[in-house]
Image (cartoon, rainbow, N blue to C red; front, side, top):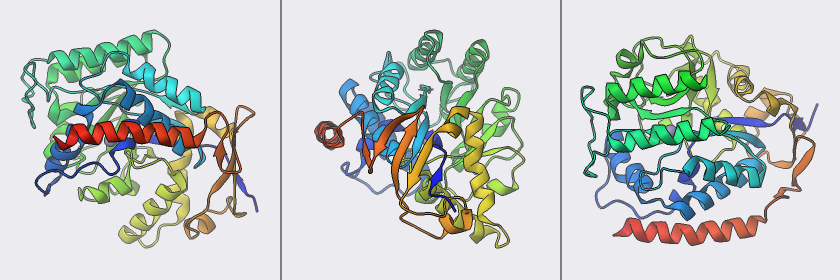
Length: 356
Ligand SMILES: [Zn+2]
């Protein structure tokens, strides 16, 4: 019987989405995954500026920490503020005390005239925006930043861009962090990435992946259900599975509970230990999280069966590298009221911009 765990790893996050909550609805109701991307996420990332990115990251990192998530693997996009964006996110996480593995998600969906292309020809030329995204990854990693090379997804990138991202990752001895076959629009991802993927790549979603690729697969059950893209059947894949939230907070026990009931819906013989092993696989990317200590308001944290059927368990205290970063539910390095207030100011600016 224990009221403690190690720190948790959120293996796929979008800290830039913390301010999306409450954003104005698009004028028409999206009725498929591509329209959700076009009308929600691509509108949002296109509107982000420096202050919005910083306070969004501060809020997301603080919310992660008070849930016992001490490590975040982040995937960032902000086409109108690319240069320096990864250092800005790393700075916010450092201030809160959360470790981050950052990347800029390159894409060719914005052509050089600023026009949006939902689908990009594999044969098209790399855009300037994609070049700048790769340069941001290169700059950040060259300066010692902890991260990967990000790619949005194969279906919004030319082959030239996919190859360049793969080469840059190999140069820095890191993997590529990429959305793979999340929806049917990206069903050709397997064929296009087959010759490029390596064991250190992070393949996000893999819902409609039609072949085995090298790398870790990151499962995001809440996001997949929310976008109605289908079930990824992670227990049937040969890859090592990690758990992410795809930007919907970073409460990993909550995500694990949802992952478990979705898994049971698919296979009644499964036990919570399958999903808990996905949480633990995150320590392959962030081994130091194992030494972090998270204390909860519940005393059966060593039993996945207990945790899976006890919604609402809360972290009360979090210790990272021996430093108490959360005490009695509140972060110690930052004032949570100030973070919420500053983030709220930026969300008003962001939502005004999106309402036009
Ligand atoms: Zn994502």
